[in-house]
Length: 401
Image 1 (cartoon, rainbow, N blue to C red):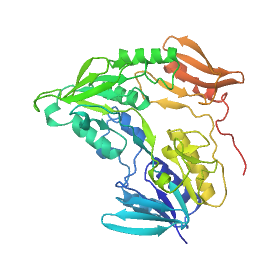
Image 2: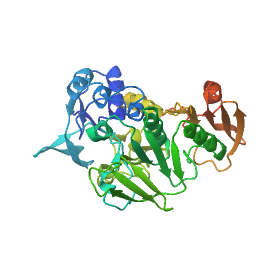
Image 3: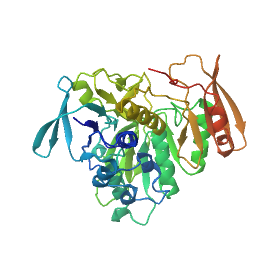
């Protein structure tokens, strides 16, 4: 029997393999990954300093251990060049060798790539982005290089979204001086209403994090002397200049669509899939950050878990539509504890109702049908998470095939 092949060894790929093996220990399973195949929890990367974790301790198991656990073949450092849906084959490249592998079912768990801003200057090439364990290893090497040891570093973070704010909180908790730069007027501008965003910003600023908002970075230049620190000078569009030892880009992710596009799969913001996570080609599915499920692109942990459980059942012979209940997101910013359940993006008539508390606020997204989302800022508000979640309708209801 031809194997089920999963392309990608991130959280989506490994979670799907694990859920499938709970149901089926016999069907051949192959996982193909361009990296080393180490299993780790990607959300850990943005709060590893506070958790006293290093790049070496974040990894949970290497590819061989994962192969043994999953009773799978794992081809690491292997790149998929092409998908041939008509022949149900993929072409892979490992070093100088290429081969064709025939699949029974193919799952794209290829994730998303960091968005790169067009920034000028001779230091732009040295801007870091953390989207994998190998990226994080380089980032920690920059933080711990001998020239900077024993002192507080100046860190500039591009992007005041969820990941940017989490890294800012983590770096500040480790004693570094952090400045977050974003074109938006407030942090988490796409997730929070104005009042909540202002309070969230105030709490992060109280911890020592600085914000440069309503502007963007025009140029990142190296200081003339390599021995001179800080290493970088950032010139913002508004003329402001910021010195930094390390520059981290966290402006967002874009789903990886290369393989899908070449194979002729339907794509939009992500790889388009139906409730069964099927793409436009028979036998090919998509999960994780690359998958746009019935118009929803949700790069969070809980949607991945829902996808993996449903698709495992489908691959095992029981077609099972994915179910998206209301899934709040906990933002890892202890200086400003935050839980967000964004209302569906296609709702036109949402109004926000805010309730101020002594240590934060509750903001409710309402429409004519009732509660559609919420923001809980602070420890007191956080206690309402379960009660409010129960009031929000499912994003994708339970369905039968």
